[in-house]
Length: 51
Image 1: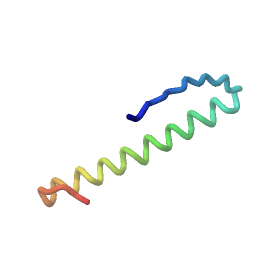
Image 2: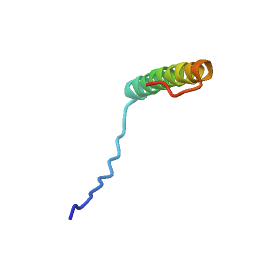
Image 3: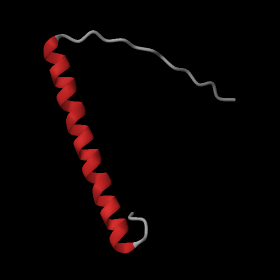
Image 4: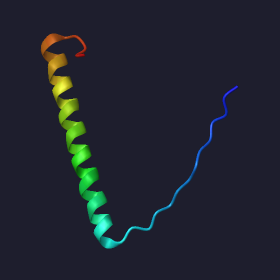
């Protein structure tokens, strides 16, 4: 039997770190959306899932 645990963590970043987090999340979102777009276009061209 496996027991799952979860921990809640709260952080209080200063203004400099908030800006860094916002930029990082923006970059990650951009890369994810580009990958999703590429995969969607490849599927439309080949009509099969890309690997």
